[in-house]
Length: 192
Image (cartoon, rainbow, N blue to C red; front, side, top):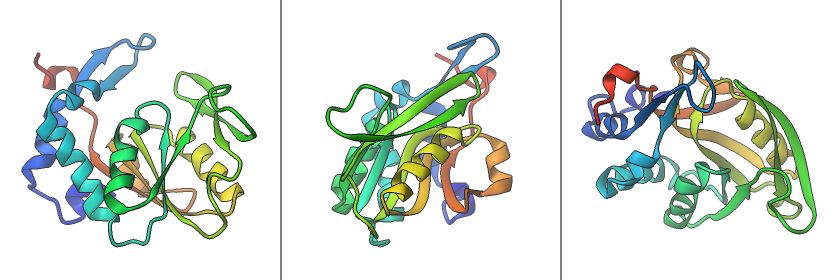
């Protein structure tokens, strides 16, 4: 579900978040309109508002684990985890975590990849949310859900800053709710 449909309709923070995202055409390959959240991070107020919206949503849900997907989920996940008193679990690309890991493959709209998580990072029955910057096809989030559930965690929801309009119709991914702040920007919407 989109934040505007869940009590935040007309909230000026959502417009500010959307306006702070830069569109980079043809990156990382032709035809992709990359939604660059690094420009959002340059504005401390908008960055804080982004984190605060997620914190307000998750603070009273009994969340024990905030899992962030490499790399842009790392920019929001730790702050959310600290604010709600949860641990942060990084879900990383292959070969980045030392020690014993479990792994899950997934497909992107422009390729294939894998996510890994440390064995023992989550415990059976822990309530978790997964954080990333964008949901497009849902492949990355599906892999993240499988990793956490393989270790016995209960995935309560997936939270993303940006979600494609098609996500609005489904509202769920593998039976888990998706919470999205804004839709992608178009190139003509972005001005320096």
